[in-house]
Length: 403
Image (cartoon, rainbow, N blue to C red):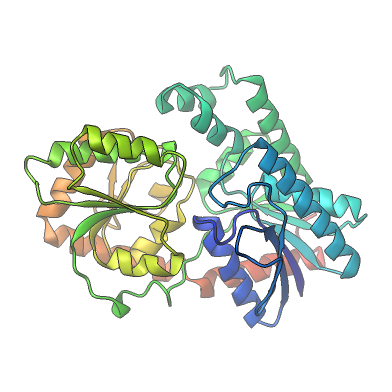
């Protein structure tokens, strides 16, 4: 089978999609399938990389993975679309797999249109485009934005309505949309996407890389890793650390990742006087994350919105306790005090309570760590998920199921 993958998120960018795309490509190639990837080119990276699969990197205006703007996005779509067209003209691919329902899907759709190809398009739904834009750029608190957005009578600004319209058109133009969680599938249904166009296909974790037996469990600090954006709720985690300062003065928090919200968090750390308790590690390579998790006593994911965080599975695979919020698709995996510890989103008080209980109760940490480890090995291994991907690909290729 010949597969063309389109993804604006790919290393050196960080995050779930950026790490899962090369992993999927590698495993497909190992099964004998021909895989080519179209992504963005950043400073220090070649235009073409030949591994077990081929990576084509196209022009990106800023040339920096952490920087993006409207102009960057427009240029990215055009660049990727032209490369998709070029590749489709040269080779007969069986299908295209776009790894987000925005830039990548738009580039894939335009590329196949201008190449005059009717090739099937699979799109992965990673998150709601207009909601994320609202969270990034609205001056309102998250609770107000979320309530406004999820209400049928919501007054959504025109430009965000446009994003909703574009996302819906891309979904309808796709042959099938894969959703890592039931939550994401329901979101698509709310937007008027037919159920028959969606399928729940979970994320997978690399159990060879995230193997706790390869590392020493030191239990030295609380860890957050991921993108530094407003909806990740890291400011509530800082407030919880401030409240814990008097009772747990030696407890440390390490924050790994980059993003435009980082200066705001660093400022808050100084305001709270937490310079000795909080350390910002900056960008960490994905392959170094397992060692970092192994040194933590627990990992905190205080998200206000997170469709299905890939890092959640990585923490469970490393047999570490995860403190997370009851939002989106997280409760589909994390069951309170069984496979993790759940708290209300946007509450520093509940985060503080959860941290204190987990720090004090070694038995509880051990219990949820073991259960989480079993859960991820049973349901989120690449061996299992790859079979599901291949079954989907074959069904679309043969046109037996999805039209």
